[in-house]
Length: 285
Ligand code: HH2
Image 1 (tube, rainbow, N blue to C red):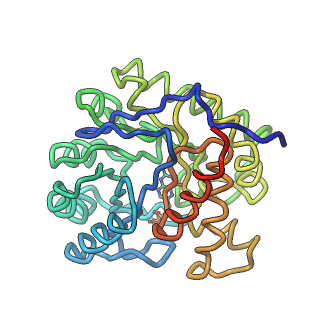
Image 2 (cartoon, helix red, strand yellow):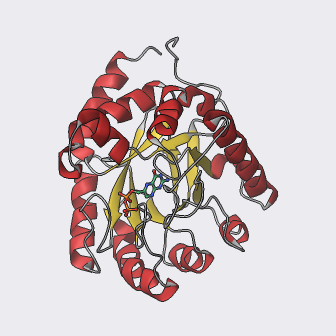
């Protein structure tokens, strides 16, 4: 594969609520799961002080965005009720409003989006890419950023038998279509990022194909966000259980950035930050 330079055709700033995020260098989105059942084992259940403490620590370690989730979307996960998701995330969003970096909320529900945005969230990370009724309109009336992620199926059953004729082409077509829909609803291009959704209705070979040619996704024309951190396809390559996948995750994040990703969603912020600093120093300008 030919080495790809930074994608200068892709937007270099992201309007993200109260912030304008400079994407001329790769950015780190830190994961704070206020869940009892996240696959990585780092969820802090409904423990608001622990979630806040974790978010502050990850910002100290170099996070540029904090992503707060109140529902696990791991394969086989059961959906949680809207009221429960709100109970988990809202107090955390409210306390973190003074964090100094954008607050993202990882949700697929319009009711949760609306409440999170009212509580001060700067970004909605939607693993359903505005699939819920009124999701696009809810975000359109704000200055928040949105991450549109590709998922085939639903978390409960998405890994049962995912099939594609051409995974790269289908994911690119889906993300382009959702970005168009978002813009038609009134979400400006400068607020949109796209994500191929590693592990969401994808077999090992699908994940690998997407990561190898991530440059094609960057060519859609929106900043690319990737969530590879501790995921099982990295575990099967490195032969590591979930709690021992930090090095594999950092390596994958670097490969993704090298192919045009602008935001990496990670659990291990300090290690990722060091690796990205090396990449930034060496990458051609
Ligand atoms: N992955 C997970 C959750 N949200 N959002 C985006 N945009 N991209 C991803 O790849 C992505 C995501 C799953 O990871 P995690 O939050 O660590 O686990 P869980 O869903 O079990 O809480």
